[in-house]
Image (cartoon, rainbow, N blue to C red; front, top):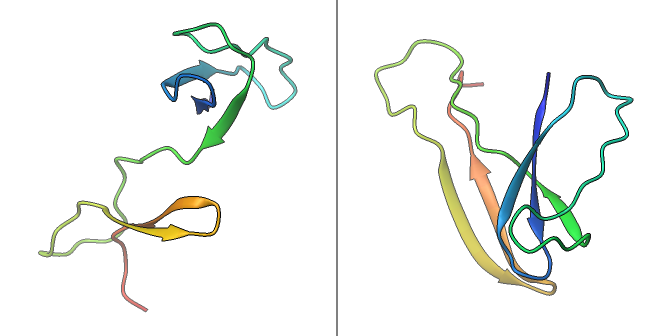
Length: 80
């Protein structure tokens, strides 16, 4: 059962929703203010691929872009 995270466009808080299948039609409202204006966000995973002595923590870099602030998430894993 996947858990999806959404950010409220009104209060900017994160809400999590559990879906039992891809076809679920759940009512999605902000769990903090009740607004219906939400955007899905990329959830941070606690999963690493491979075995390495280097850090397994994801890193996030943020910069200004034309739509506001943009972030890039670097996930650890196997080297190419």
